[in-house]
Amino acid sequence: MTPDFWPQAVAELSRRDPVMAELTRRYHGVALVSRGEPFVTLVRSIVGQQISVKAADSVWRKIQAAFPELTPDRILNAEAPDLRACGLSARKTEYLGDLARHFQENRIHIEQWSTMSDAELIAELTSVRGIGVWTAEMFLIFNQLRPDVWPVDDIGLQKAVARFFFQGERPSRQHLHACGERWRPWRSVATWYLWRSLDPLPVEY
Image 1 (cartoon, rainbow, N blue to C red):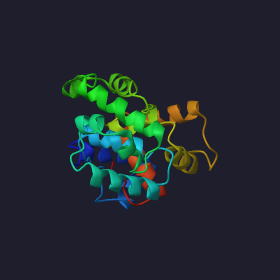
Image 2: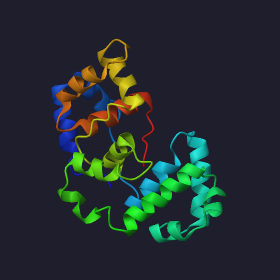
Image 3: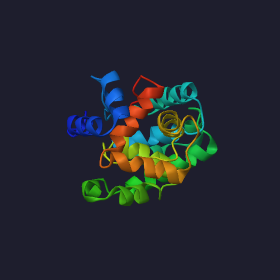
Image 4: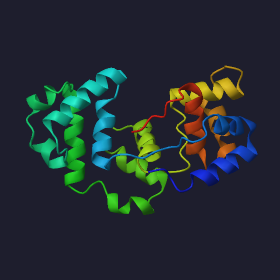
């Protein structure tokens, strides 16, 4: 699913900023796509932390094989050795258990997300062990399709902004925040195109 706001965001960004005008022309015909049920998406986010994409894909395939129906109940009823056999560390096994308990005990309020601000949703997600601000921001962009997320701790975003606006020098957080102001209220869209400048293949979480 591509967000309804995408054409408007692209048009406005292109009018305001020559860099965005060039990037939106270069990558015309592709857009942000949301995939996945929230619990599954968050499990996969935890699985992929601090390991290579190849290793994460291998672990994920094993989890899918072991748990064809990946639900909070299935994770909570699983034995730790079964999760470890998929390639999960002891810590990530604990993180998945905490995530599953949050869902099972209704501490994750999916039905209220549409009325929650980005900050409120990030606060709810980061109450889960193993989910930090960056992971929550990626979830807001790729799963919830929030239009104005600006993930200043993302290395890819930092590199792209450095290339286009700071002559290759990595910007400080203050400068990065200031740079993002030009793209409100479409900073998620600007981020997506800046990522494309580094890797033309879109990432789908």
